[in-house]
Length: 171
Image (cartoon, rainbow, N blue to C red; front, top):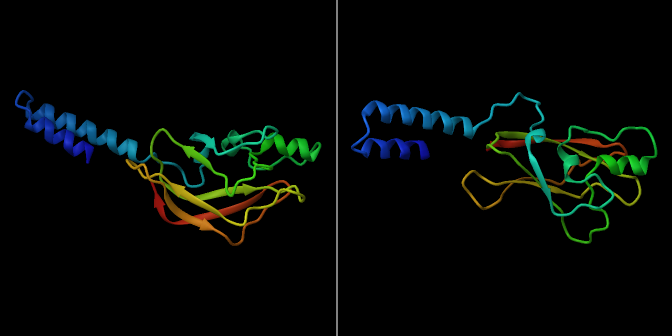
């Protein structure tokens, strides 16, 4: 829509030639198309391209960057407790009803699914009873619920994969 508005504004301007208007409109459309969808290969981890923020992080865990650093599972070596904390985002001990982590990209991304690794220490840290994916549509300030997962959630001592496919891709 922005590309069409820009093209119309150029056409309405008296000092601009038709060719200048067409060239500008073609470039604006190409820029809009590139910004709208960054093509990624199926299975590519687009989290690696995102900035992260969280509602909370314990001081002894790696932090929100653990979500998109490419280390999908906790190495099975060393002292489990200290090793797990070096590789994970955690909120243990924060007494609130829910926690969140947000991934933000510089350009809109098309997202069709999510692979989420959830870990447990087989003690006080458990898998969540449910989790909800939300997204912020392009040019919106309102978060939209995409999918809630409340069955089949698994956690493992070294991380367990939870795959979620979305009914419709989101941008």
